[in-house]
Image (cartoon, rainbow, N blue to C red; front, side, top):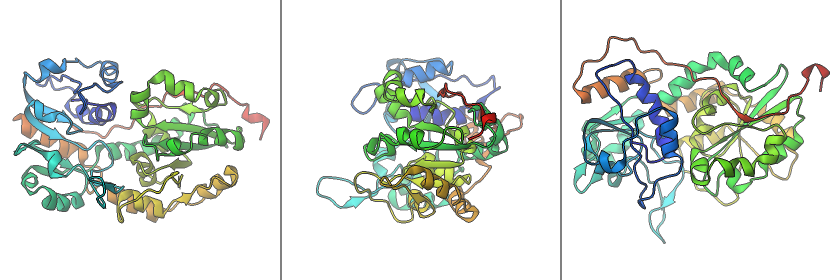
Length: 389
């Protein structure tokens, strides 16, 4: 079930565990958003994967042996055993949000009872968690869901780790030459995100970093593409693309860019956390408005080891300083917060899915596949590195 592109992207890692099994037939359906509208880009995403797209009005009339979802949106309308996954790095909140007008800021997250129970009915038949700490939260927030919870780890992170040995291949695919550094800029889609607060950041980086020494790649949250459309995104960054910006499509490429990066400039989104967890130095761009982070959250811990970007200071010196702030101790701490089962997610998830299907697992051995080579948009300008800086 794909209510929006982010959920679909996360599900593709899980669907790969069902490959080569002729007993299983997979259909996709695009669920309507809360207001009944279909999120832009969802159907296009499914068709780009080559999936059979079942119209929603037909999907709600079918009985499925297994429903894979990475969002609780509209899942109560489908019939079948639901495996409900997170669509980011864990399900615990990083920011504090007020539950109602005038109330104190309080964390809401994917383990809230209101998201897991509908009219007294527990929605998931299996609830994969990435970390043991989430199980403790679930006991307080929705105790009736504890029997269906299983700590699986994070299959997305496991693929990132498996991709690290291909770093040089990813850098070549992005056009990063010998002696060049790669700066990855990642932005979520809220107004307080990096590019929501400071849309001029990419232009400044491209203008202030010597192009023979640096390349800049942008990783935009899929909702930016889904809400505004491909044409609008390309139009916004047309000047940057002409100046050599590498812009990654939302479906894939962001993980390869993280592996290839010498520095990640981001906000409090999952992509920044994943970058820190595989050892990339991180620079955080402060939001234009005050943002409340939950103490001890993943994003808050990432921030403790990150350099703060300053808008009133030239960027080149800040970038060089941040690249020297690599900390293996900090990396291990962040990785340990992302998953309690490193390298095991594929095995546990496949076992869980086949348990719900009532089928014995295939004999085919499971391997954690590296992510594919990135195919960026833009970056038309190429420089003769032999000419020197």
